[in-house]
Length: 403
Image (cartoon, rainbow, N blue to C red; front, side, top):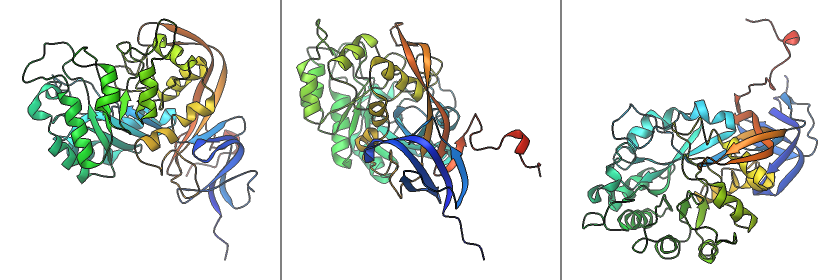
């Protein structure tokens, strides 16, 4: 009787970047039964059902995009955005976990789960919108009656493995305040829901001083562990005239506020992000805010967004940390974003291409770069789900006859 193989799949000869475990060097990765079986130097090929040559490639945990919109639904006249199909658009960028940032609210989360989350190869988690209908009805985020912390907390508690936090967004950005629209209603009620369900709050925010200021959001309203997304959007005072990051931002980070990139169609400006990076203030997490309105530009993909930061001067290992272990910690899912033995085998392989490439932000500004990160293989729970170059396939002369 033959012995069972020791490994289903062996990724051999790649450069592994696994910031959760402090790994950044030449290692092999072995996978068995959908889990990481070993990460070590020069694992023997004997006993592996399949060996993939990863020489010249970077091997990382499957990426976590902490701000996406992947709730696809029939067109609605008042919807704020149209979500992307997670499997169609994210696996090609090495993303194996997508966090939907508030597309669904407490009234329609069950429909989101049934139609998208339960059917997806990509692992979909969610920030639940404090508004009843989320972004499917743009007016819902403006109605006090819809901003219900008790019901939002109850739904988050009912789905603890799927809902990672509460989202506040798009609230009353330009019209006069009134009794039905006080300045902090959405943020305050989201924080109250977060307190009741024990989860963080992610805020998409528009400052309107003096009643609603950015420093007040970071230093007074949000709690340690809460998240400000779209940090480098044009509406935020990030750097002074000398390109120095304002002190209150550093104070907010010290007190535990997370700063998420959330690129989006209108929320990432090189004029904020580049000076901030040069002054030692990178985002804590890199995310796309991907939806159908920006997938063909300026966002494109997670790999393309990471490439922007590489060309702004961030080392690859730091960019991978901000796309794996950091978002995992931010959402309280320490089992993700890692190649630890026993972890689900979500893995991505990348090629870093040298050349001359142009990258654009949301303000119609261009950055010329010399590096571009390209995903060439994605594994989800040990299964190959993206392999456009056929790394896992034999050359055609040696391919077996079709059955």
